[in-house]
Length: 378
Image (cartoon, rainbow, N blue to C red; front, top):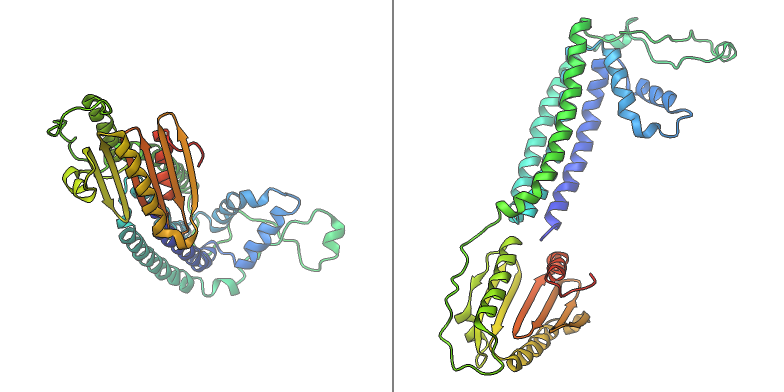
């Protein structure tokens, strides 16, 4: 599956989230009555001597900002805008992974563009509200109400070396009206509850994704099992019931993987004149070409498999492909891999699996071959 477009938008949204955080956090600090320098000083003072402080940066910073703001409504509104601007990146990651699982990756571009538009709208609203905060706190930082943060000193000797008066942390020093204790407690509870609910939702999404991959994949009815008109039987022919079973098993596995295989007996019989085919499946989707051929004669299967191997090699001979050949009980495997594509020919008795796919499907194809029991090491 193509992961390139997904990664492009993931990187773009991550960068945009970082940009919006850089812009909006300045207004968030204003709503709490602190400056960026106060925040740096606070984080430095709490991290000193704590080698794990970087892991709990936000855990330490947010309660301090809440306390400095007096749990004001303006602070919590601004904090929501800061969080909302990160939401498009999170939604894109969850939805993008889900779309790739159910093989809807052609719509990754639409999803990415929609999330960038959503980010732009949320960031614009956040900046507009931030400008309001900036206007209302224009005189605050030049007044006596503003209390710059200074770490508490641990000894009288240190205090004597510094001419300024030691700053004692106070419960409230923000520019806006402080909330009543009951209201502040309620706001803190809502914020913590929302965070926990979001984490639970993310976990549930990743638990549900495997079920989505089997429930909402493109599906079609199972091909009819009526046999084609048969010529006279030969000793090398397989039993027709066994042929049908293998054919239907491969069909079901391809559908489960998100493909829509078609019964292409007539088409592939024309592609391989002189080859007696009993069944044939064809998948041609998003650059992948897959054929599953059920022959009636093992000698023809051997000759056709060798011909397909040669055909694959000729396609990429100039790029010196990395070739792997394996054999097991009743089957032979040939794979070749280059920087741009991946090719496979598997002959299992009188059945042949022939695949030519772009590089972004290589990992998936190796998993698929391993699940079929053909590729032992990938």
